Length: 200
Image 1 (tube, rainbow, N blue to C red):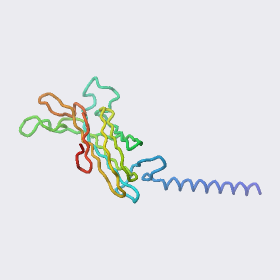
Image 2: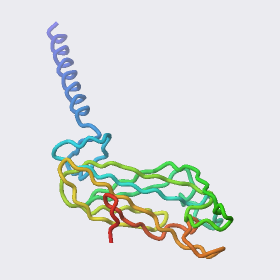
Image 3: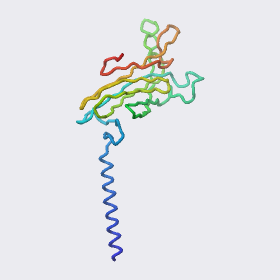
Image 4: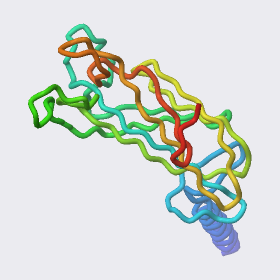
């Protein structure tokens, strides 16, 4: 009987400890920073006191998969997903973004070649992430490893405020039928806009 009582007490203590651990895990939400974190992905637009929000956006278009027969089999161009790597300070994360087939007219209404650098069939990828972090000044880098393109911006985050960084692709030039930028040639660089203003 005594052994049974001891076992019951031990079992009860174990259940209580498990319950506390479970509660602790639940309170550490997706929006909360933990030791060593510089940022965490935010799940809403509200910015709590003591934090700021960094919104990182870019939209790129690539040629269809298999458009260049000699392209590496490991390339994500035109595939279902394309990786976007972000570094803020010393913390990095990579997100795989699902692509959407996009086909813009190659010719203008007057029959001339379209001046749209994304004219033609391909795959479009839209990256849009909200990160929560402490107020301060940070170096923010976006890496498109498949295109060997990197762009960095310095941004100051204020308490309770949100800052938007947009990386706009500048495509390499094609030569035929006219020389102009074209998504089919890949991304040459990324222009940086902070809260709508282009950075030098």
